[in-house]
Image 1 (cartoon, one colour):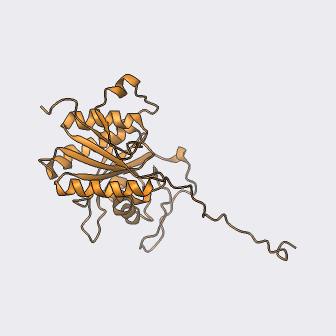
Image 2 (cartoon, helix red, strand yellow):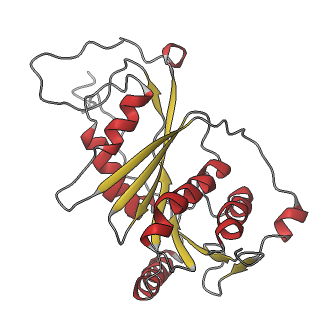
Image 3 (spheres, helix red, strand yellow):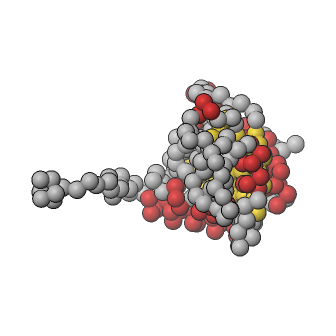
Length: 266
């Protein structure tokens, strides 16, 4: 009877989208102008984001790899059976085609994000750009490095701008446009392809698989395990927020701003 009435067993179909921001195209134009300006002046431009949280243990990892026999893994992906979680946070140097991925073991927080930017600058950035005075960061509008996250701004001030004497400009992609963030298709997608079908048995496995990711265009990746615990629900007081040396840009100030050091570099 149902078939005669043209009913069928059907899946949900993803076709609906949220209404795009009216400033979406204006922000993309602004992002390209900032990128060109920083590149022409020899200043570093990076793209940042957190990759999907992974369970560490003998669990199924999506994808396939060439092998004579399949790997037996746990039937169920219960978090209680995992040895922990891996939270990869990446910094992708657009100009150098190099990535740094810091694998956290607790939570993806704004402090974790900002300290990873500081780690990248200390280990790689200042060596690649020894005369740099400015840093441009492309980030999504949500997550630990979101446009409205006060702790992200406060942590950038403390961990990057003040510590290294850098002016840090942040430009956020509009909501729903994270797929255009360069790190997504130039670094994270390559990591996913590289470890496809390989169980993330240990933290060493995760770090090594990330660090051995390469491409024909010369992508190089370094990876590091970060065991520091990052508590959640940390708040920034109004007083501390006012102490941030924050300059919101004239063009779309909610998505574009610069944080300058509060004192000169020693």
